[in-house]
Length: 128
Image 1 (cartoon, one colour):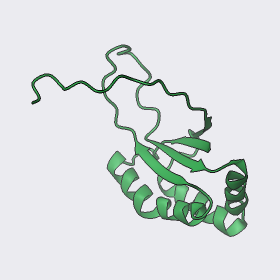
Image 2 (image 1 turned 120 degrees about the vertical axis):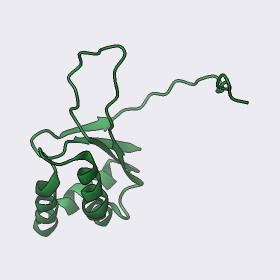
Image 3 (image 1 turned 90 degrees about the horizontal axis):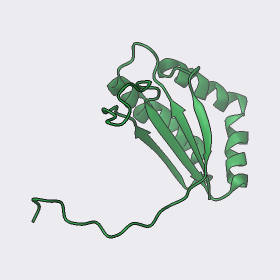
Image 4 (image 1 turned 60 degrees about the horizontal axis):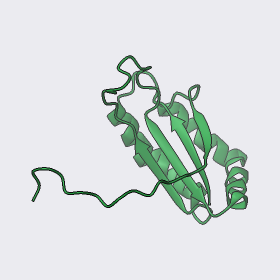
């Protein structure tokens, strides 16, 4: 499995709710058009800040969404890159991103997963 993560930030002056609304009602539809038949999974994880009890003086909010896309293999990802590079599709993507994203702060990563097996979950205290 070949997995990618894009970290994206909203445009200044755009609320998180406006950002989510636009992504889900416009940009995700463009993504579906591109990823259908090529990707295994396409998801957005919207990031809501919370206090960091370990590093209270951290850098603050840097990204608003982590978009993940999973592919069977690198060849399927390459097919998406080729499709996204078509002038008509690229124009559609860029024009939509310009409406709600700060394109200067994006980061793209290939995900390499390691998982630690954990013991079964214990009942929470006070829960029957």
